[in-house]
Amino acid sequence: MNLHGKDIKIFTGNANPNVAASIAKNLGLPLGKSDVASFSDGESCVSIYESVRGSDVFVVQSTCGPVNDHLMELLIMIDAFKRASAGRITAVIPYFGYARQDRKAKARDPISAKLVADLISAAGADRVLTMDLHAPQIQGFFDIPVDHLQGVPILAPYFIEKFGSCTKDEVVVVSPDLGSVTRARKFAERCDAPLAIIDKRRPKANVSEVMNIIGDVNGKKVILVDDLIDTAGTLCNGAAALIEKGGATEVYACSTHGVLSGKAIERINESPIKELVLLDTIPLGENVRSDKITMLPVAPVFAEAIERIYEDKPVSPLFI
Image 1: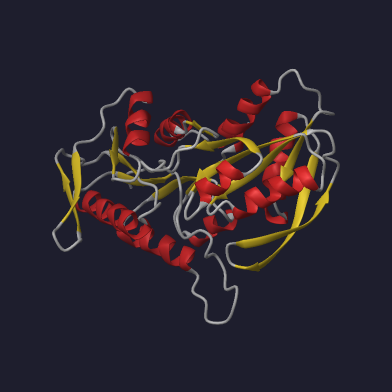
Image 2: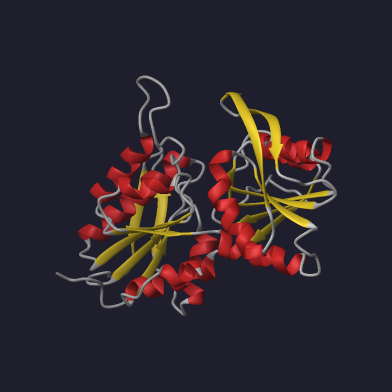
């Protein structure tokens, strides 16, 4: 069995072309020649313009909005490479959509994350490389290897440099809810800062109500840490509570994935958040602009992970 291909080839769909180009540049490779378009009825159309026979192919494609279009592009590209006799196919998915539908929250709910995992495997992917799944156990939905990168090693150094002169008595890392405590704790350990938690109740989807702040944030700068920001309701409500109830002096926030749907940008601009740091796993739309948002690149980390996968080296050192 061919464990990996004879050479590395990087291809991209329409979701992350800039990230894919940066990954290829970091590896000193040209981006693969392909075209991903649509027929007049909306069906995705993929054309590959170079041989991939025996190659180790990496397809870079976040399944971000429009989610279904980008997911179909990914599946069709994987199928095209499989039928072109690629040596091994890795789906590089910086942002894995449908990850929030990972369990049956109520009767007759689908588990869409498992369905998407099955579709990617059935299309012909040999492995998956992704970053900060909303629920880490989604790795178990796949019957193929999954390399799960983390955003904290990219985000934490930015704030360490920003608050380098501050002591741990001046900065507190805050988890916006109980589900993000593990991620926030890792962030706090890297920054050598204490941890606080916002305890909230969610009456219905995309609506949150802050109930209590566990920990001391009075008179301190705080960093809210989350994996993704969708409508920004949780984030902005949490930021307001930290100022009004907790007595924090400044609020900063960071997240791996900036979905930023609905009124997210409006909420962020009107919130007390001084700066929101995001990774470019999801490109900002042309109309999504805010002076508060800072974007950090993920291409160097993904490029190193791809090189390690190709050379059969462990990916775990990237977490240190």
